[in-house]
Length: 227
Image (cartoon, rainbow, N blue to C red; front, side, top):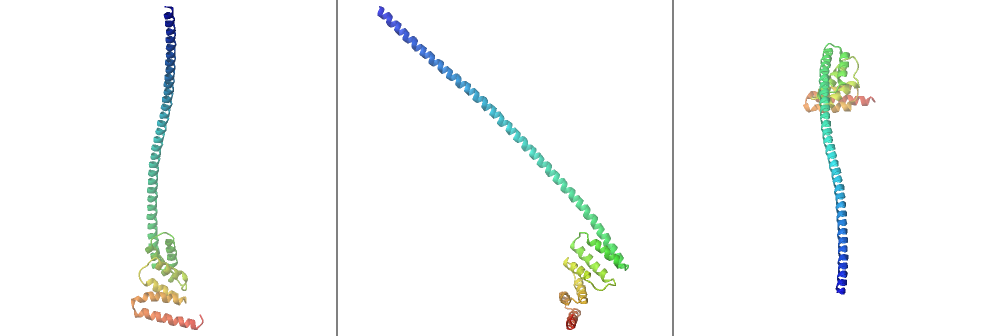
């Protein structure tokens, strides 16, 4: 009987020890679970904060994009308005200059018709300082050359240069070549004059052929005299 009681006591103690071990294991597991839960909550909290930061950054980027598009649109509108203003100013300036050129052209014609050649020369010179198209520029050079030729001065290079400018600007017809050639003959520049007359010779006129022959003869006379 005593042995049985001793065995029971020993078994109880063993059971109690095992229960304590189990309690410790359960407590340890609870601590681990609690620690995991705490760490998980902290991770969730950090992740939530990072998500908020990312969303906030995305929102700021979207705002910046919107502001950029707005500024781009404003700049486009500003450039458009600026270009329209410049175009309007340019058109007004061109219209004003065109009216002034036409007035100068008519005034120069009137002065030349009334034998006020010096006044006509000044008027045509003023008109030539203004920007214009090639056709009108060529006409002004011819008119100034004719006005200069009507003065009592001997032939000079100013007239030749005006005819040259008229030809350069594309004036049509043979008159400018013919007149420049005659002036060059008077100035003794025969080789250039002959080139102008050769240009005119396409007319196949006997008169032009005679002018060329006379120019060559005059050139020979000048060379024989040592000029």
